[in-house]
Amino acid sequence: MSTTLWLTRSLLAGAVLFAARRGGEPEQSVAAVLLATFALDVANHAIFGDPAWFAVNPGHLVIDTWAFLVLLWIAVRANRAWPLAVCAAQALVILGHIAKLWELAMVRKTYWAMTNIPFVLQLLILGAGTWAHMLRRRRIGFYKSWRTV
Image 1 (cartoon, one colour):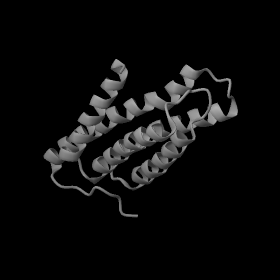
Image 2 (cartoon, rainbow, N blue to C red):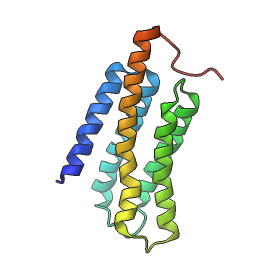
Image 3 (tube, helix red, strand yellow):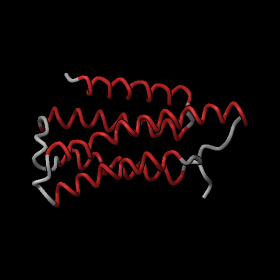
Image 4 (cartoon, rainbow, N blue to C red):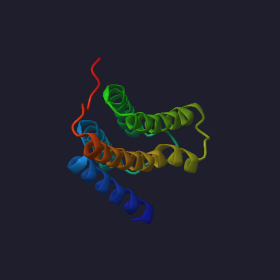
């Protein structure tokens, strides 16, 4: 397995554990979504095989669309700004799928980059958001995790 894959898995484990231990509900919810996308991706590959990157992978499209919708819901409801950045990164993934649907001749590496690199960005944002939550909680004490609409 490649170094990139193991680095991503290590970052996923670290960010999810950090959010689970130190985060509030929004941090834990985003961590759960990102962990679920990873688990669903593993299941997708186990059932349908490895992606060829020549065409849109329908399993990836479904998983990524679900993740976008859930992350959007969290971003709109959370009493924090950082989930918007995680949702924006997921929007880049969706745009990668749309671009590939539109132009099948798109270079395979470009499609891979547009649908995989934002995940690392999301994990880094989750870690930074959890850190900010932890510092804010130390500074001001308990505060609401969700906005009241």
